[in-house]
Amino acid sequence: MLAAVRRHLGMDVAFISHFETEERAFEYVDCAPNGPLRANQRMPLSEGYCLKVVRGELPECIPDTSKLEAALQIPQTAAVPIGSHLSVPVRLKDGSIYGTLCCFSYLPNPALGEREMRLMHAFAEVVALRMDERSALQRARESAAREVRQAMAQGAPRIVFQPVYSIAQRAVRAFECLSRFDIAPKRPPDEWFRVADESGFGLPLELHAIEKALTSLDDFPGHCSLSVNCSPSLVLSGRLEPVLSALNTPSRVTLEITEHAIVQDYAALAAALAPLRALGIGVAVDDAGAGYASMRHILNLAPDIIKLDMSLTRNIHEDGKRRALAKGLTSFAHEIDSLVIAEGVESGAELEMLQRLDVDCAQGYFLARPLALQDALTFSMTH
Image (tube, rainbow, N blue to C red; front, side, top):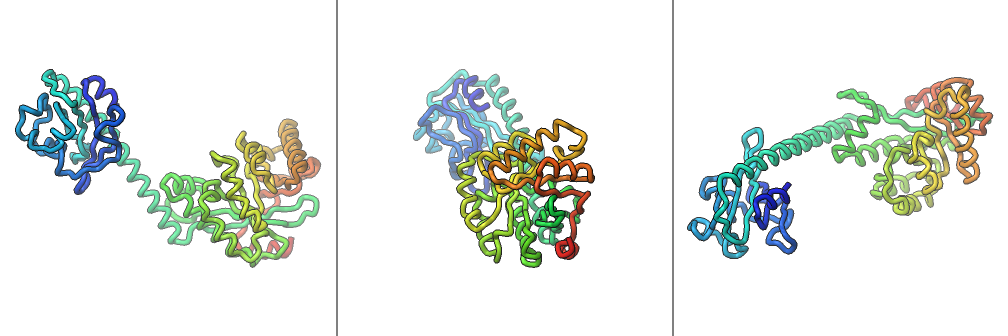
């Protein structure tokens, strides 16, 4: 937009300044290379034209600064130099002044007048709308961050444990740790994590949930491992390693990298996982078969475990296409020495078909619902 302002008015520099307490920040700048201003540059609010225009000490339109004594008193007029200057306030819908939309040329421009000022005011209204939208978004982010912090302070999330069975042995070999939020506002767990992520509080909430889950690791029998959901961003942040390295038996922990998580740099992610794997931590690709990202995860991360998404498991005994895809993924997994876990098993017929397809393990409501900690500990001793 600034480029359009500058082009239509034939000016050398256009910018949007934001008034802060003592300074004005040049948030957006459009000018030729090596121009006098750059984005994010700051200047005392009392200096220059902007505040003086807002206060009515300078006119909004100055075609020739050499003919206005007040403009000649401003050091930047000669230093830049500024030959002509246009400036209008950016007024938000609550009436407050955000800053100014300004442009100037190095030489006087006697042609500047009412037409140019109508254009400047129109552009300033558009800028104000954008800033109002940005402010509303920022307020929403801050409100969401407060909600997440308050939820954590109230003890959320509550951790539940869903058993993972060895199909051949019909015995529990692991538990997946899942988060539950029992506080207002009522949201599904995925929604809580999405809101936290969008508010900039995603990693703290994710790490908090993992720490809560793993505090009970030593309470489970040695043959049972715990798996926790983990985003690539948390792995790359470096915050996870101190938590996992402090465990007595880190080899009983598996990190489930979600299929939906976006990975920009697999080499960096693999490098960040390397010290965790050196501790004995397992890596699983979650939700495999639900989208193309899963295959990229599998090929680039060489996971220890591949988890078949419940959309693939559902009614697999009645659907040849699902069976073919599950068989292909299972055969591939075994070729690269990965274990296969089927999620979302809800019937005996599904479980029987998965066994025929050589799937190693399964979890789902048919086998057991997610359990509170004490129930999970009892379950691990009896199944």
